[in-house]
Image (cartoon, rainbow, N blue to C red):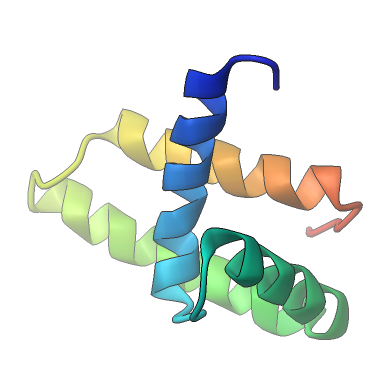
Length: 89
């Protein structure tokens, strides 16, 4: 990503998942923790992703966020995983 604003938005969106997963530290530290966790706990990562998506779907049902917001959260997570060669089914 070249644009600073895009980087900021993706970081903020990824942060939602990192917060949900309860990683502690700076955004960089939490991303590193997610990377390490992903490499060692593939199936558990999938479970957390499903739980995160379901919790966000509840927020959609409660009209707290829009479907587009959830889509953007997923795009940020997917980009992080893709950039770090982490494949999920």
